[in-house]
Length: 90
Image 1 (tube, rainbow, N blue to C red):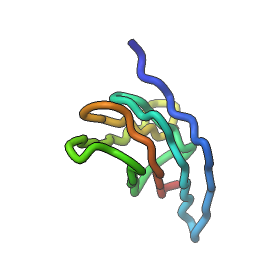
Image 2 (image 1 turned 135 degrees about the vertical axis):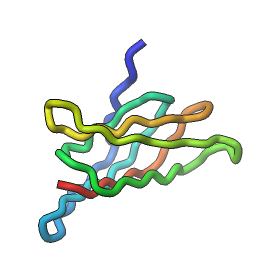
Image 3 (image 1 turned 90 degrees about the horizontal axis):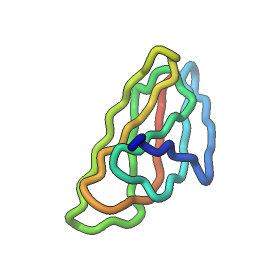
C-alpha cells in the first residue's frame, strides 16, 4: 500500500534572507505518510502534534529524491496525529 501524501489545511510561506520557510497545519497523519513542502532542501523541520496519546511516539525523515523536491516521511507509532509543521530551507 502506497503512503498517503499530506495536504496542508492552512499554509503560510515565509522568506527570511536567503532562506524560505513553510508553516502548515496537517491532519490525519498516519505512519509512512509524506509531506512535500515545496523546498529543494530542508535544513530544519519540526512537528508539533495538537493532540496525541501520551504513549504515541513519532518521528520524521527528510529525503530529496531525483526531482529535487524535499519530502518529509512521518513515522507514527500508533493512531493518527494532527498538528503544525514548520520547514526551513531553500
